[in-house]
Image (cartoon, rainbow, N blue to C red; front, side, top):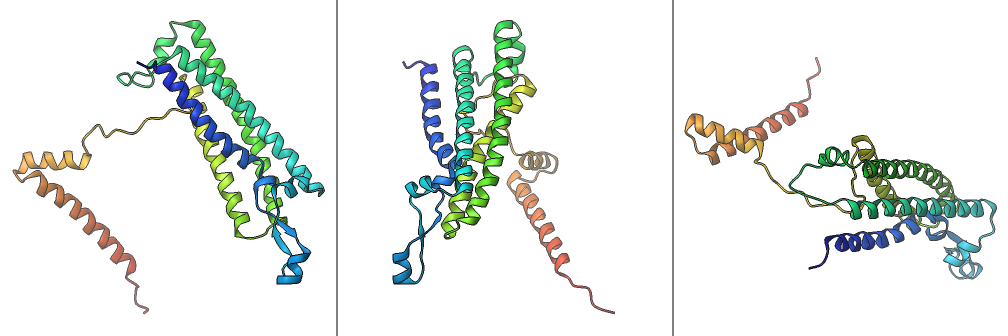
Length: 253
């Protein structure tokens, strides 16, 4: 039987490799965003001298502002790499010293780990480092987006310029948002939330409307299916009445 820790490490490594691509394209925007380049041959044939620059042309662009943005892109990539190293170190420590038990509540670690002072201090230190590094990285990336937005405006070629800028940025922003929530909850509630491993939601209680319908069945003797349908129908009728009231236009005097 494969050890559970090995399975968790493989899962973390796989997700990390997928995120490397997102971070690379999302930080090095000056290279990967389609930008406009002049081409005299196109001017003579089509009347339009604009085409999409190649990656090499974006890299070799000698414009002062373009070079500044590219350097800041590289700095943002380095801060991401640093933040990822801390995140992976934190994840590795959690896999090695902690485990997941679905039969216990998520906050149970707080009561258990106090009995292990060394582990408790190490967990707090890792969470704090992770949170602070992540905040710094978010600030750097925010500036990166601002500088790159002007570059997109100056080098605009077509709708692909905006769509690539939006998609590359959103992928990174989603990662940052999820990591911030993990770091904030871990520091605030003194626990170790994973930044990589998530679980599917399980429906484990009865719907409150069904419970109310069941209670009415016991009180009135009407079948729960009829009561449940009546509850939903009444809700729909109320919504329709509200919509009709909004559509009524008062007559002028």
